[in-house]
Amino acid sequence: MVNRFKRMRKAPAKGFTLIELLVVLAILTLLAGLVGPRVLSQFGGAKTKTAALQIADIDKALELFKLDVGRYPSNEEGLDALLKRPGGAATWTGPYLKSASVPTDPWSRPYRFANPGPNGGIEILSLGADGAPGGEGENADVRNNP
Image 1 (cartoon, one colour):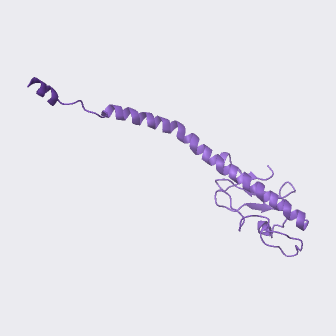
Image 2 (cartoon, one colour; image 1 turned 90 degrees about the vertical axis):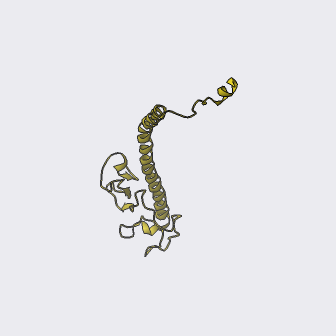
Image 3 (cartoon, one colour; image 1 turned 180 degrees about the horizontal axis):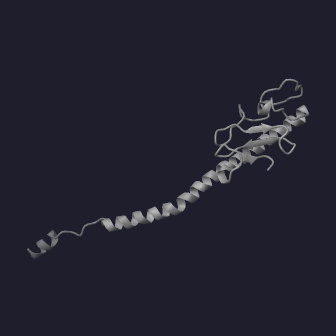
């Protein structure tokens, strides 16, 4: 009979206490607070790098346009001249971009094109995340000739 009562004793509860769960949640919150901002800043930097790469591709396409036509597109023709033959460009052999349309910057705004730009050459510009001239970090302008 004694053995029978020993077997019937309550087995120790399996699981976690409330304090153990709170400690784990506190540790996870601290980790998220430390790692989260770094991950988000890398994401913003990726958009700036993407804009720089797209601008470099457009710049190369403009160089090919100049080799064929003998000039860069005018401000009126814009970057669309890389996809559609502009008037008076008999030696145009485009399209010079792989896509069906001129790409937009990573913030879904069109790239700005100027011929001549402020430095005398062509300028391709994205105004960054804020869409305003100047700025720092992710809001900084991205251009082909810094």
